[in-house]
Length: 443
Image 1 (tube, helix red, strand yellow):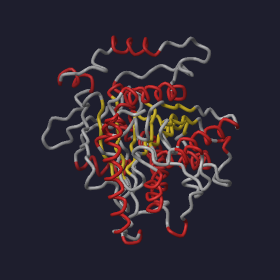
Image 2 (cartoon, helix red, strand yellow; image 1 turned 120 degrees about the vertical axis):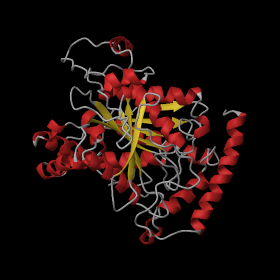
Image 3 (tube, helix red, strand yellow; image 1 turned 90 degrees about the vertical axis):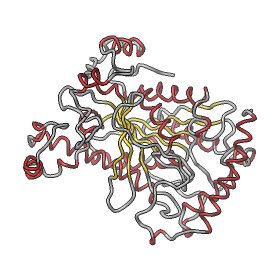
Image 4 (spheres, one colour; image 1 turned 45 degrees about the vertical axis):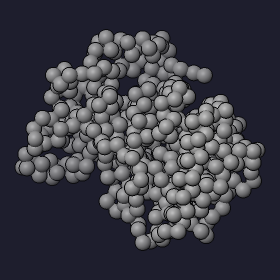
């Protein structure tokens, strides 16, 4: 059973959440009155972006859609500064991950360890700007950059709260970025009730297409000669004007992704209701096919998905009054998210097993599902995983004993052994599909 502290905090959490949900219902604003939307709430504790490497991760925020509040936060691991990894030939012997990490640290001792200013300056080619009038964060050089897989992350919060820059989400993303050795693009999608379904889902898909656009713009920039100026170079006003004329759209290239991102190894990760968005984006990626080139979704991770349905499962009956997010409060959240005329617990956004929901399951990417023993939504997530396995999709389930919904991402539970173990287990599975050296890990 969960600890006394978790039980007490759950009581306080549910009281506060219920109060906020009821306030949202009473102060409901029609979607048409606020198409721009909101991506965070005033009561959220947020973490400021830091474009220099703090604790091994640099972060930056980008507002990617001028017509809405949609934004992303990029988490770039310091490991991206090491030389590119050579691709192994098929059938070659695989090196143990720990040996590889130790070798990289021996060869580049400043990677994975605190660095002083002079050491980092030499490593990054003096890309941590010190001039008072220019950008102070990390700006990559175009030569010899290591490329990392890209992970799209969708936060939880029951559709009406949470944000990609909250303190808890920032800590979680940093942890996953380090363990998986990936660039994380955390999506700040629009919240309900200001923007009901399908706004959050459309935002998630829009970010996937934005990644594809970024990759194509970067290639166009190189082919049109703008690469000669350098991704991290300083431009005079005349150079900028000539640069825009010579390579239209190159000014929109995101330098971190252009230098270090590998869109052909893209992973989707969703937490709670964010898992529903991740699964939707995965389905749309399957439907899009080559239209998303060079982006390729190679796997997805669904962490305690926010699935529900009209016909209750055993856990939905026995655990209806479970910890933190009980069934009654989740129903309130769904009423705030779904348009009134579309409200149904068998809505395609809610129930992953309804007929005609999208492409056949056999075309879905490998899917890891994480569930908690004391989560009332667990059985439906397990059923979805079983349905994927029946059509030969790699879809394991990781179930954590004595765990509750949000056990790996809630602020007060982030530092528990279970939360750390969950992140490590996710990294082991994800590396099967993103490693350049093949399937190094397996269950």
